[in-house]
Amino acid sequence: MAKPTRIFFVADLHGSAICWRKFINAATTYRADFLLVGGDIAAKTLTPVFEESDGWSASIEGQRLSAASLTELDHLEESLRDSATVPFRTTRSAWEELIVTPGKLDEVFERCSLVELRRWLEWARQRIGDGAARLCLGLGNDDLTSMEAVIEADEFAELTDRKVLRIDDHHELLTLPYSNPTPWKTHRELPEDEIARHIEEDLARVERPESVVFNLHVPPHGTALDRAPNLTADLTKVMAPGGETQLVHVGSTAVRAALEQHHPLLSLHGHIHESRGITTFQRTVSMNCGSAYTEGALLGALVDITEDEVKSAILTSG
View 1 (cartoon, rainbow, N blue to C red):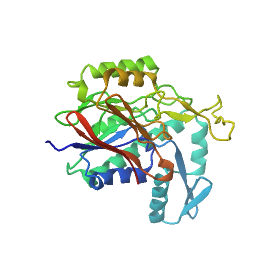
View 2: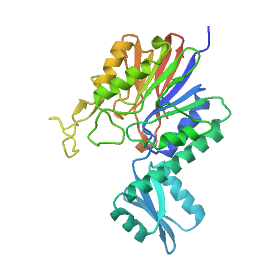
View 3: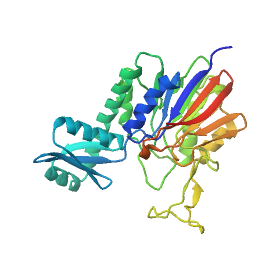
View 4: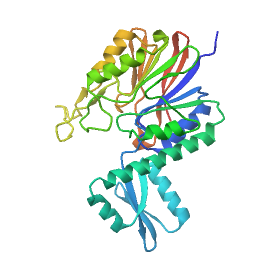
C-alpha cells in the first residue's frame, strides 16, 4: 500500500510571526509532506516605532517598549511581530501627518505587509527549502490581493489561489480565497452566488472530483465549524440571558451546498477562530482548525490521506 500523504493545515495567522515559525518548524515535527495555509496570513494592524532622542519607542496593548541601540531595536520589532502587528519606523510628526492624509496609511500598511510577507517566505526557504515538504499558501478575506504576486514570485512557496493544484498522484486541491459578507467589510468578500460560481468553475477543472481536497477559507453554514459571536450593527457582542456571549452560524450556505452535492474527500476551513472542530458530510471529513494567534498558539489540523480515504484527521495545538 502506498504511503499516505500527510497534510498539515493552519489558517488565520494574522501576522503572528511566532505562529509562522511554529508552522514552518512543524514540517519536521510532524513529518508533513504538504504544508498548507488556508487564508488570512496578513496582520490586522500597523504599529509605529517612533524615533526618540534617546533611541526608539513603541506602544502595544498599553505597554510601552523602548530601545536604546539598533540591536535592541531589532528585538523590539521582533516582539511586535510576535504580537501579530507590523512594525513601522517613523517620527511622531511624520506619523501625525500620515494618519490625517486620506489613503496614505493604507498605502504604508500594504507596503509594510508585503515586506513582512517576503521576510516570512525567506525564513521558510532557509528552514525547509530543501524540498522535504511543499509550502502552499492560500489567502483569505483579510488578505491583500497584492500578496498574490509576492507568493507567485517566490522560488519556493506556491500560491494555491485561482488554480487547481495537484497535491500528489491521486489528489488535487481546490481553493476558495474569499468569505461570504462579514460585518467588517473586509478586502475579499463575495455574495453566496459568487462563491458557488467559483467553486463550480474550479471543480470543472478537477480530474478526479471524488479525491479532491477543498481548501475553502469560510466554513459551511449551520455546523459546529461556523459559530461566532452575534454582533449588533455597531459590532457589539450580543449577550445571552445567562450572561455568556450569544453565538450564531455565520458560515457560507454556498460552501455547505457544495459539500452536500459534490462530497470531496476532505474539506479544510478557517475564518471562524472560535469554531475549531471536525464534522462530516457523508463521506467528507470537514475541519476548522481554529485560531489562537493573539496568544501565540498555533492551532492546526494534521491529516493523512490515501487514494480514496482520510486515514486519520486530528486537531493539533502548540
